[in-house]
Image 1: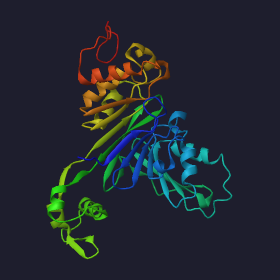
Image 2: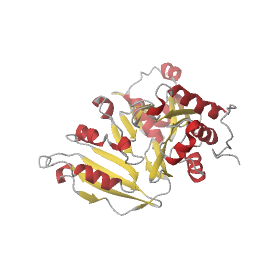
Image 3: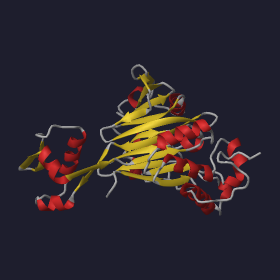
Image 4: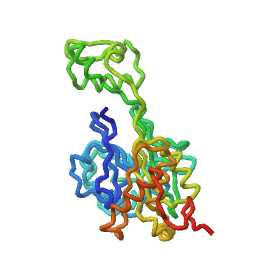
Length: 341
């Protein structure tokens, strides 16, 4: 079965965090974190419609300028989501340039800050020289930051001495075309299948006509029953830059619960547990434990510290061993990573 979400780390496990989640067959993409992206082809980045920023430390946000330059002359709206203070950071970036030649540009940035109980949005329009404008009153925040017909995006604030936002993207339902049924009906694949899926996702009436070919329109209900199998949607979770604490662990397990793929930072090996705690980061073992506690299907660790160059395989092995529940000897440590008295 081909999945709708196609996630990949643009800079691998060792570079700046930037997780691209392409939506198969839809020509759309989401980006989680905005580290260095200048090595990524423009064609890969142009489908991005929303960026979910964990926090604005340089390695998570320095790609903003590159993305802005790529989108600037386009008739598009790029939406950014992140913790409180994100709009100030965006405004500061924009203030570093002169915008006297953008009066005819249609490009717009929409920035949404996620606070404990509310979300607040602003618009920065190129034709207004990126002056900051409020986008309506604050809205309640109950965990979901985007509710798209195809997917939802949830967020959870974590403690990194500042707020570092974790995210989970969940496909509402996965709609599979049955090739044998398509062939039996004498139909050819084409864009009409996307229209069919979109109509099903939005709850259109069964008598909604679907244009299969220029001279062939058929009811949604008939086509859906014949050709489509509905299965639970895919879920991808993302956690980076956070302290291993009871509160953070509980929030991560809730957010990532049952994820098909869990991207989790693992900058440190367990041998450097104290250093990880001082820096408010996770160890590989802690990442594995969180994935196991959340019941995720696959764990992908990343954001490795360069101190382990030549030993990155050990980080992966440590995380996967803990994720699988294998017995690993870490010394006299309890399950929380604290020394046993």
